[in-house]
Length: 610
Image 1: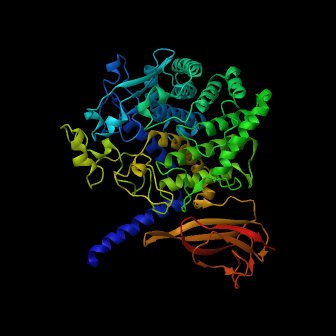
Image 2: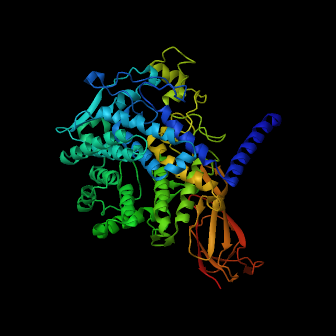
Image 3: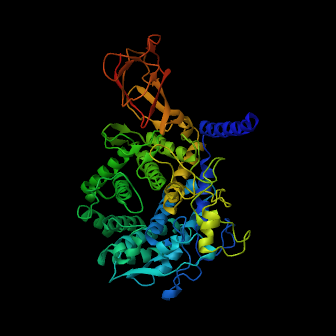
């Protein structure tokens, strides 16, 4: 049987080699950017345009809202199903617009400007339809429960398409305020290209903010059936978030004054958070307010703006592992880990905020001040890049979690349209239950590649099971893709520029940003399972960056549970020194030690040296 195994082994070797080569020379962030935008065309609902690039999709939801006497055709399906949820859709548009606002030149340089504007407008046109009266917003089309009973293409939908609204009697401050933020941000994005449309968006944003602020309440109390899918933790953050974006769009100080005066009561300067998502906007808000402080012109608000900045830097320092132990968890492979369910949405949003804040700091040559030391804008970018590279294939599984990128990516994506042959290939209607029997349970890969979809991603041990039923890991969502646009655009431009990202394109996922003369690079070189336990071979490269020879180097290696090679142990607990043959570590020279263990990586630090 060996002759049959050889081609498989060779193919596996070549695949691993191709991804390692890509990681070594740097990923094509421009390609990742274009594919990330293409995903939004796969999520379109409504009458598709003639220039639709995702050809396996067709028209769908052409009578949405008609049952309630309103035209709600258009917008986006949120993930692998066919419900149009207003809150995550609005957040998605805010993030798409923010990407374009901050990185317009970078997106244009990658020839993706038109696609980005079209992606935003597909959603904003829908929200204009959904907001026909100042104090009313249609916040959802479709029912998640009935939708999930069927596995069918959007073009064949047989599930109920009822629409649900918030109004003065049934308020939804969170969804109304997030929609206001989205339209305000979009008005900035469109201002140079379509001023009348920009003004229309701003008009709706102003009205929606007043509605959200005047008639307060959580939208999932007015629309109870959404609680199982996108429950709201509260609306305080969205009110501040909307006001912040209206200030960005108008420069009218009444909105800034709202953010300042309500900073305490609505939690803006009270909440120190370690995530940024469709439900929790505080970190994004705090970074926007830090921008106002950094750029100047609002000196009368300095005291409160500094409080916002302090909370913004708490978030960033926690992401960067520099927050005095109060850090966001990392997987052994170096991925930020916040939740088992679609963790990649938090990775993309965190990495986006990092590149944005680095952008704010750079003009003044300012640094991020963390409890464990200062971090330069370049170092912030390095960490953001490590997360992008993990997504694209520099990870223990050597897999791209961006579908269609590179050669090795998930092929059993939890997505109805991608998993069933298109109408052109299979014109007959695929029924509700037939879809489960014939397609959901199929052991074959999806017939349609949903290019650019960011799937939920691996678990806290970097493990990933590519199964259609494993929706926590294999289902994509528009909320995860939106922050990638700004992230990949920035990295694409820097990777092309002389002396920028190219000089740290090969930094491993777990780079230790340090002010010490000794720098550590952590990487995982092998992984295997034994009796149900995952083991990792960790390689640590130690580099002398001090400019002077170093002797008598003493290291602490904590949380070590397995064997270690390359250092000499001492009588002191967790303490190691250089091997006997290595007396001096000269400037810019390095040495390597390795260890094997399951679970999280060991913590390596310098105790002393001469």
